[in-house]
Length: 50
Image (tube, rainbow, N blue to C red; front, side, top):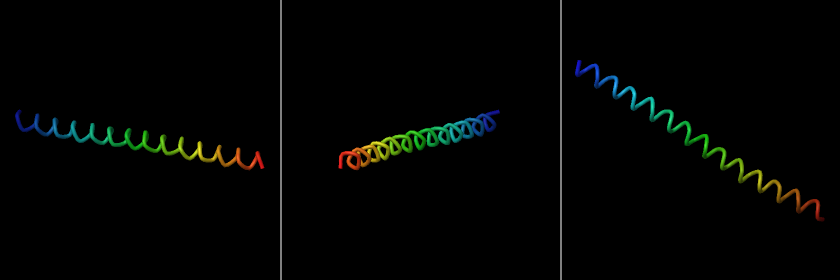
């Protein structure tokens, strides 16, 4: 019983870590996209003002 519990616990932790990393990567990608969009908007404004 103890061995099975250890396996379950480690599998659970590994799965959670995988989800956490996935979510963090999504958030990081989202913030990068927002920065790129802001830069693009500034470029468009500069072109329109010329």
